[in-house]
Length: 209
Image (cartoon, rainbow, N blue to C red; front, side, top):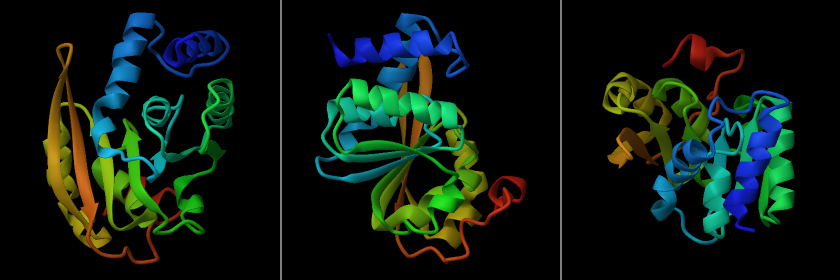
C-alpha cells in the first residue's frame, strides 16, 4: 500500500483516541497536510541533516522523508504526538528518522549548529520561532518557516530578532494550494547565534526579541 495512504489511515484512527489534528477528512488530509508539507521538497537534498520543530502529527517532516532520503529529527513537547510519529516511522520503515519528546530550548543545549536545515509549520510567530530554530543551524544553513497569508507581516515584525540571532531573509515563496494561499519564509543563517539563545522559561513566546 502507498505510504501516504497508510499514514492517512493511522492519522484518522489515532485521531479518534486523542486530538492529533482538526483535519480528519481524507481529501483534506492529503491537501492540507501532505501536499502542503511537500511544498518545500525542492529545498531538501539527499543526505541533509534536518530538524523539524513542533512537528505535531509529523508535518512537514514525515511526508518529506517519505519522498526524499535525508536524516530527519522531529521534536515536540507533547508525548502522545511523539509516540504517534514514532509509530508512523516504524510502520513506514523510514530509516534515519526519529521523533523525540523534548522542548526546543532543552534540545538546543546539546545540539547547537548541528543541522543543515530547520523546518517548522504553523508553530509560533516568526520572532519566537526564529529564536528556537536558528541556534540549531550550521552557519550557512537554511530555516524554513511554513506560514499562511500573513507571512510578510510576520517577517516585518521579526527583523530585529533575525538580526540578533544571525538570520537573513532569502525569499518568501507564495504557493496557491487549491485556493489556499501558503507562504514559506526562507531564512539563511549568516553568523553564529549567541549561546544565551534560545532563552528558557517560555521567554521567546512571552517576550519575543
